[in-house]
Amino acid sequence: MWNNTEVLNEIRQYLPKKLMGICKDCIMKNNCLASCIAMNYYRHQDLFAPHWYCEEALKAGLFPETSIVPGSESEDYMKKYNAIKKGDRDLYF
Ligand code: SF4
Image (tube, rainbow, N blue to C red; front, side):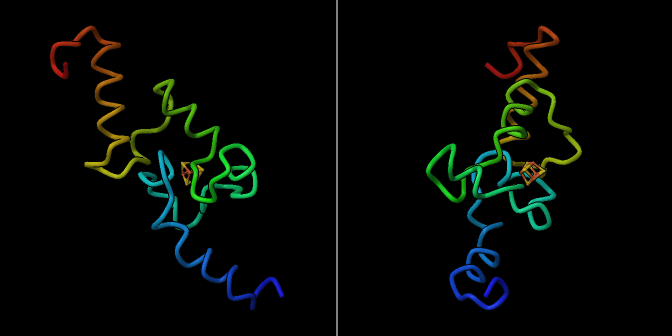
């Protein structure tokens, strides 16, 4: 049942392309699949919501930049975050 259920197979196949937030921009998304989509659904009522821990890490500027897809929204966020932290606020705002 777990391996051959049509809806579960569709979720596994399309999940990486539909993820949101940091999971959408993470280089590990095809393997990690947003960690636990049941927990993500419980927290956000959305199967494609990002995992809370990585989302919080991004907001705090702690998500590893080497794991972010170049040119993504999350990379842009990290650049702005680091510019503000360094006092280079005028570079981005
Ligand atoms: S951001 Fe975190 S939870 Fe999401 S795919 Fe990457 S490692 Fe997994």
